[in-house]
Length: 112
Image (cartoon, rainbow, N blue to C red; front, side):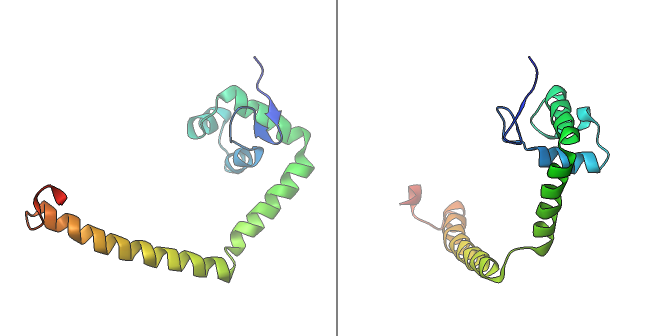
């Protein structure tokens, strides 16, 4: 069975050709890429062939993705992430303290 690329993805996976581009740019072999990503060397070779056949289009999208990643999140997203982190830390402090007390025999038996 020949591996296929469908909608810029390795068929039957969530691995995109841009995932493969990243490792190709870092000099990884198909076998090394397959060991890193949950795909076979044959699937990696299919992605590499697709990349070569559509080099201009794939690399244009890849450059846009890299530029977006380099810019980072917009301020409003960073603010939401900071709020989420603060809530998670408060939750961990509240419930982690209760678990530590129970683990030390200080809390009610059976966690009730």
